[in-house]
Amino acid sequence: MGSHPLPVPTTAAGREGLAALLERPGRAVVGLDFDGTLAEIVPDPDQARAHPGAVPALSALAPLLHSVAVITGRPAEVAVRYGGFAGVEGLDRLVVLGIYGAERWEAASGAFQTPEPHPGIAAVKAELPAVLEANGAWRGTWIEDKGRAVAVHTRRADDPQAAFEQLRAPLYALAERHGLIVEPGRLVLELRPPGMDKGVALTEYVRQLGAEAVLYAGDDLGDLAAFAAVEKLREEGVPGVLVCSGSTEVTELAQRADLVVDGPAGVVALLEALAEELAEAAKR
Image 1: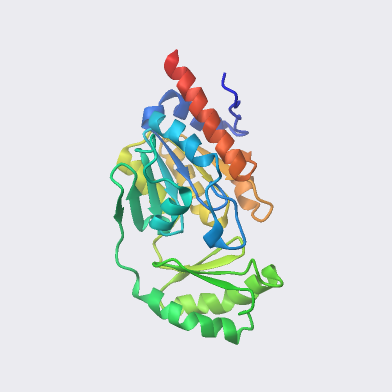
Image 2: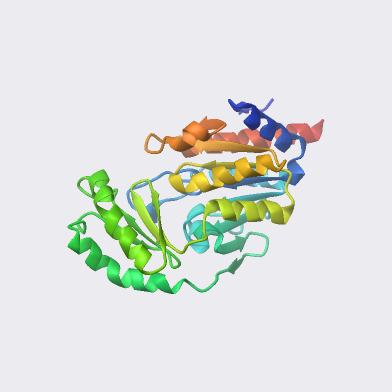
C-alpha cells in the first residue's frame, strides 16, 4: 500500500469503473479538466497555474495508462504553458485537447493541431465591449480572448453573481446573432461555436484509442457534457468513473459524481494514489 490510500467511489458504477481501470490500465484513459481541477480557480485566469503536485503526479501515472487527456476550454497552447506539460519526462502519453477538442497537442511530438476559427468569433469580439457598456457591466468584468472562443468573467466585479446574471440575456442574444452558443461556468460566460464540448472530445478520444475504461475529473458546468459522455460509454460497455473536484459554486457535478475530492489538491492526491496502486500491482 502506498502513502496515498486510494479513495473508494460511493456508487456501484464508479467502483466497477475503478476496478476496470486498475485491472486493465494499459487500456484505460484518464481525462482531466484544467481550471478548477488541475489548477485552482483564481480571479485573473491569466494567473492560473497547475497545482505544484500535478505534473509530478501525472508523470508517475501516465506511463502506466494508455493515455492521459487534459480537456479544456482554454487554447491548447495556453493549457500546455500554464500546466507546465512540455518537455517533461514521463508525459509522452499526455494529450491536451484545447477549446473543447477543437485543438490538440501531443506531448510525444510537441505538435499542435489548430483549425481555423469560426467567423462569428471575430464579430463577437468586435461587438462585445459595446454590449458590456450598454448593460452597465463593464466595470470589473474581464474579456478573455481564447482565439476560437471568447469568455466574459465577472469574478472581479463589485457583485460578481449579479453581473453574471445581468449579462446572460445580452450575451446569449449576441452569440445567437453570430451562430455561436454560450457556455456558462463559474462566474464566466463563454461564447463559442456549436458542436464543441468536452463530452464530444472525450467520447471521440476514447473511441479513437479503443479504451476499455475511463476516468474523468472536472469541476464546472462545462464538465457535465463529459460526465454525460462517461455515462453513455458505460451503457455501451466501457466502465467509467466520474470525479468531482469539489466546489461550493457548482453542486450538480458533485450530485452526479461517483467520487468527490477536495479541489485540485484532492485531484492530485487521487492521481498519486492511482499511480502508487498501479506501480505496486505491476511488481506483483
